[in-house]
Length: 145
Ligand SMILES: CC(C)(COP(=O)(O)OP(=O)(O)OC[C@H]1O[C@@H](n2cnc3c(N)ncnc32)[C@H](O)[C@@H]1OP(=O)(O)O)[C@@H](O)C(=O)NCCC(=O)NCCS
Image 1 (cartoon, protein in one colour):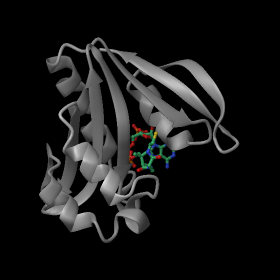
Image 2 (spheres, rainbow, N blue to C red):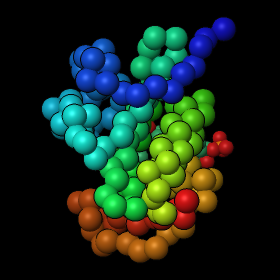
Image 3 (cartoon, rainbow, N blue to C red):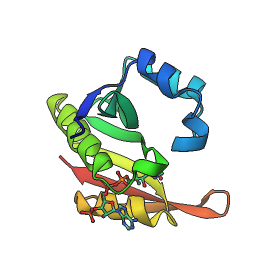
């Protein structure tokens, strides 16, 4: 049986997925941007490991009592197994432990799967930005935590 764990996402972990980050995960952040985030004092990143394989990662930035979900992505061939839910659950715990009162995020209005994930966790839509992503609106969601 495979062992699933949620761990701090370190720069050394990034080395493992650098080569396939843009092809097998997602292409909206490259490894340089991600590395910068992993080194930031205000960011908290977790990865999901299946045995020793990194199958996803997610991170928040905390400013005062507000946390912002920066990124959540699961390897394409590992989606639909509950991994993003595990990551989000742990990030909410981290935000709470830093006395955050809200977790905010932005999502493309056509990203139905991500929107389903956020609604499942109780996020509520609080606004939108027209044409934010090259012709696609951004929806703003928030969760009281
Ligand atoms: C969005 C994403 C992170 C979901 O990860 P995942 O590990 O596959 O999601 P989970 O298996 O934890 O499923 C969580 C919920 O998402 C929704 N969901 C997942 N797969 C779905 C699908 N194929 N169709 C519709 N809803 C789906 C469901 O609500 C699901 O809850 P349920 O299983 O109780 O029904 C993943 O699809 C991904 O990496 N997408 C590309 C990156 C991205 O768009 N990130 C969000 C940026 S805002």
